[in-house]
Length: 167
Figure 1 (tube, one colour):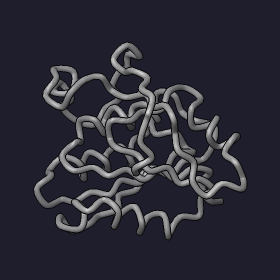
Figure 2: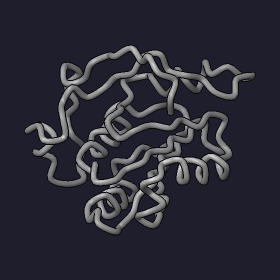
Figure 3: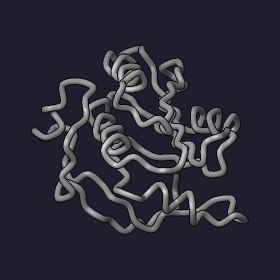
Figure 4: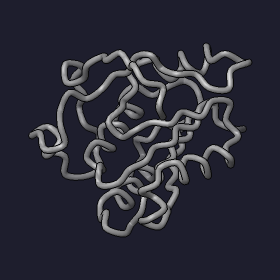
């Protein structure tokens, strides 16, 4: 059975933030079926691929969440649209969600999307996002040492209104 939501992420040297994103899926598991696919490369990014494989094989991974790598050559990875296009064209999900690594989903968020996504819509623009308020060099992010489930304090994330429709 195809997933309800296919999340396509692009990760280049943001494996520490990716750990928080995966932690959100594990901490607040959705009821709907999720395919979490990460466009990544092993060239010059030594953590993302092995960490993602460890999450995919974790006994704590919810049974309705599949984790998949979409391996790409370095030069192609840096042009985000290529990987997103490849993943979306191959997807069987009703909803394809493109996201950056600094986005997480709170409790019930993905189930709400799966249940309320307009059936006649081709694209929906999120007007609000829940964004990490910490920067890449911040101690919270730097403390990530590998693939495990990280505590997510809602106070570390802020709701931000989006002004642009750029993907």
